[in-house]
Structures are given as structure tokens and as C-alpha cells.
Image (cartoon, rainbow, N blue to C red; front, side):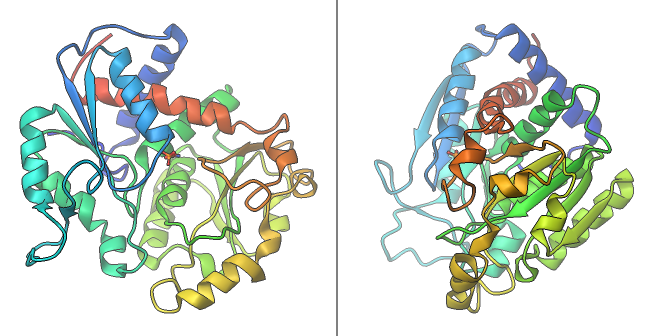
Length: 338
Ligand code: CP
């Protein structure tokens, strides 16, 4: 059974087919009843604006229905641990919940962020892995501990649109940014993977403590080698910005500190590196770079109003593309054609 739980198991050709389909559906403003009678089940362990609305809209545009579950809020609180003694406040185990939803729904989408407290579960993306194991229908990752593949595909479509002549060889900078809260690695992981797969010259600009974990970094390095893409790391943000064609801003927590020394991590993220906010002055060092962000974004913390409201910002288009790539993903997983 085909899932869209991780980009890592999809070949470039399969992802490029998805992008072609998404681009065609976007161009045609495609709406039909091609998926009439099918149901998309969406489990949200965490909040969402874009993912929730774009998936419901995608289902509607294809003639399918959708149902949303927020565990513990209008539906039973779900236990996610294997072997748990369920004598606390969790009423139902995901094993039953996902098994039952598979009886009703034709695809299950799951959002389950990183715990930020359990390194093993987060680095292994164990919850989404378990849900794939328990489901009897295709599973879509709506952002797990380690990946946000639907966001990654929307980013890829946006890069294609930004550089109609091809994004290969263009300079892509993923810039870490300050934030009041410790955010997970899913978006930066997927953004880097997509930019490398596009053949872009990729720079990860982040303070030294904010490198991805060794496992992920190793994967990205070997992917870049396989694709012949340039992938480098800079701890000097302004040097990273010089002549960039794309600035993708995102905050995340320092993997080296968050599990063992969260107070120290918070102080770095909120105070020491506060000057990593993306500003007009920094953007002026670039090659008229497009500004990207997955949203939601903290204005004047991650990036200034002037950059977000300026001509180079393409974050709304980027969010809009969630709808089109997700329509394509539903079509592929349901084996439907236009
Ligand atoms: N980018 C993204 O996934 O947005 P939401 O968290 O609002 O779904």
C-alpha cells in the first residue's frame, strides 16, 4: 500500500509526477467528483490552520468527504505508547482508533508533532511509524516529529514557479530564526531535503548549537552527494545571505540541548541569537531573494513586517500551493486520474 508518510522513500520521479499533476490541477482550478464517496479521515494531535483547511478543501474539490478528529477534544484522549498500562486519563489506544478509522475512511492523515522531551521517539519518528503499521488504508503525514512532507511538496512547487527556467544551481538558504518557543525539526528537515532534491546550492545558516541531529545531517549529506547538489553549513547568517536566490526562514530548537538542558536552549533561542531575525538589511545582501516561510510566522521575531509585506515575499503563494499538491497526493493514493 502506498503511503505519503515520508519523502525519504519516494523517488524523484514519483515526486515530480505529483508536482506535474499539482501544477496541472492548479492551472485548471480542477474541481470534480472524481473521488465521490471516498472519505478522508484527519487526526490532529496538534493545532493547524493551513493543513486542516487545505486538506478539507482538497477533498471537497475532488468530490470526497472529510472528517476531523482532535483526540481529547470532542473525541477520546488517545494513548500512543506501546505496552502502556492505560489506568490514567487516556481512554483509547491509537492501535484501536487507527484500526477503526481504517474501517470508515479511505485515507488517514495524522498530525503528531515532536514531543521535544523524548529524543528516541522524536528522532525515530516512532508515532507516525506506528500509525502506518496499524492502518489498513494509506496514511498521509500532516507533520510528524521529523518531517512535513506535504509542506515540502508545496515548497517544491513554489520553487518551480519562482524559477520557471529551473531552480537547479540557484542558491537556497535555510536560515534559523529566533522564537519564544522550542519548535520541532519537521519543516527544516523537509525544506532541506526538497531543496537538495531540486539540485539547488543549499546553505543551512544556523548558530552552532542549532545543527540538525547527526542522523538527519548524515542523510542530507548523502542525498546531496547522490544528487550532485551543493550542501554546506554557515554559522554566519550574513555570509549565508550573500547573493542568495531564496531565503527560507524557520525557527527550531537546538537538538544538542533541548532534551537535556532546555533552559539553556531557551536562553540561546530567545536572547543570545535574537539578532538572527530576518530583516530588510539582510535581504538587501541577497540576489533579490524570494522570501519563504511555512507559516504560522511570528512577525518581528522571525522576520520583520517590511520583509513579509515586501515584493520578494512568496509565503502566501507557498501556503496556497498546499492545496494543489495535496489534491495531487489524494489522487495518487486513491489511484485516480484527471
Ligand atoms: N505550515 C503548516 O503546516 O501550517 P499549519 O500548522 O497551520 O497547518
